[in-house]
Length: 101
Image (cartoon, rainbow, N blue to C red):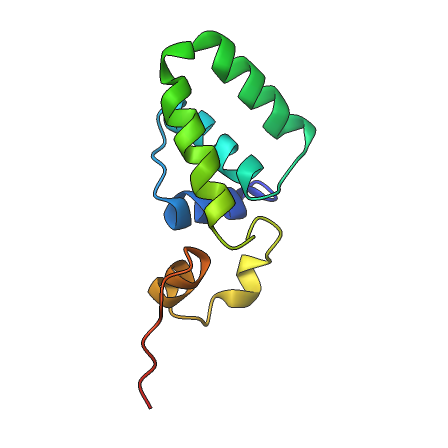
């Protein structure tokens, strides 16, 4: 395993972003909207915008989606493995969760 890559994979699952190049860039925009900032993210955003400007609308939508989600970019997902993934995903996306007692 590459350290920290497990979070990257979970980010794909939570956000629904694909793994092709433009989707990877969109996910970085989403994470920026969610509050994450680092050199790798900024480099990916700049490079992706320069190389694929035709996806700018998709990138803006991803940024807005990230702004509307609960901040999750800093979570330790390994500690959350016992959680129901769909409930966790709904919580992050700020959907109402039905609780059964």
